[in-house]
Amino acid sequence: MENQSIALAKMLNANFKLIDYNPPYFLKKFPLLGKLYVPYFLQQKLDTDILPSIIITTGRRMAGTSIALKSILKNNVKTIHIQNPKLSLNHFDLLLIPEHDRIKGQNVIQTKGALCFFEEKDIKKFKQPNLNKIKTKKNTVLLMVGGNSKKQKPNNTEYFELSTKVIQGVKNLNAQLIVTVSRRTPNKAIKILQSTFSKHLIDFKILSSDENNLYPKILEIIDYTIVTSDSVNMISELSTLSKPLFIFHFSKENRKISIFISNLKELNIVQDYEGNLFKFKKSKLQTNKITALQVNKFFGFK
Image (cartoon, rainbow, N blue to C red; front, side, top):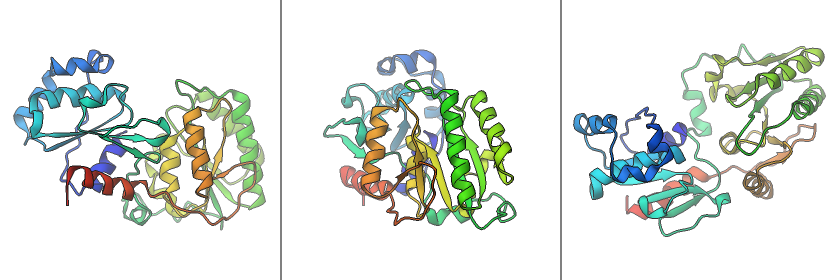
């Protein structure tokens, strides 16, 4: 969510400040209270900082914060909220909502997936150490694993199926494997991946939580990517690259995410992963560029 806010600020060529703020429970649970009450932390920020002309918030839990700041600053600020707030659209000046949510309005811009905080040309600019020493074979495969969400909890069998199919693809290419996991990946699932890979692959590495900050720099040395189907963010980011992208589908897939992935398949941006990795004429997702043009047009920015 933070990365999407940063992405939009950069797209607008704005001088921005990132405020790391965890709203109080009642403001997350009842966002309309922001019309009546502004938490002390936000009051302090308004008293000590230069007043903003644009406020960007992302995610349902931050909707109340946007409403609270708008209630004080009124027409002196434009509020842009990313993702579906599940509130009346009238509480925000502009909303950026993924098109698979199927929400329309005069102040809504539908985006194809999530905004990406980097472009392919930016990857070399990230400050992490040179990664050439990590690459040991001609072909390197990156597996990005998601996990549990409110509507989906993959079982152990699915993680075992994932690992066996990844082994097949990696062996066919005589490649090395690098794996990243998210905060949503259960410990049991990580153990399954570790155990299965260690039995069948010599050259593989599951990045620790401390090493996950190598992303997106690590994409510089990757030749193929496999992503589990539960994360619109991961899929969106990798869809902006020219590298082949494959999706491993968990069962009981979120219907909205399924629609999003199906659309990417039609555009030849992704392929389903069934155990084989191959080059294909991949198109790139252009969400950032298109969205920037639409936002500038909406507000009359040059």
